[in-house]
Length: 143
Image (cartoon, rainbow, N blue to C red):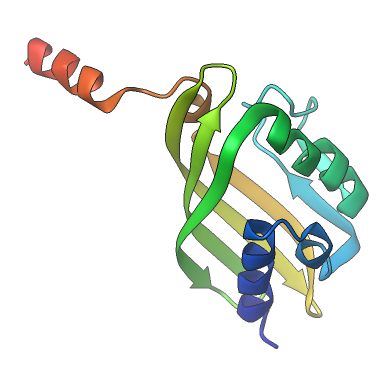
């Protein structure tokens, strides 16, 4: 199975809530680099191994989000380095507002195992979503 196929299966498993399958192809010391813009992220955003990620990231999702999902629009397959391009969607519970935020994930593989995850996401759009119509009206008023 290719690294891209492993990754696609992991995203499908995440959508289904099957975290054991999500982490099945992780190296034991896999490093997860989470955006520090989220209130639940520890200081440097670095988590190591499946248990640390599950407790520090995955377990927090239902506490902070309703209907959280990842919409994958593309994969850029570089063999041992694969980039996911897409969006995070859902409701940020603190505001009760829907969001759709740009997100990319960079995954690094070694010998068929994931060794590193790097996240880039518009966390500001999640925490305080811009209401598109209101933002457009403000821009129109300036112009």
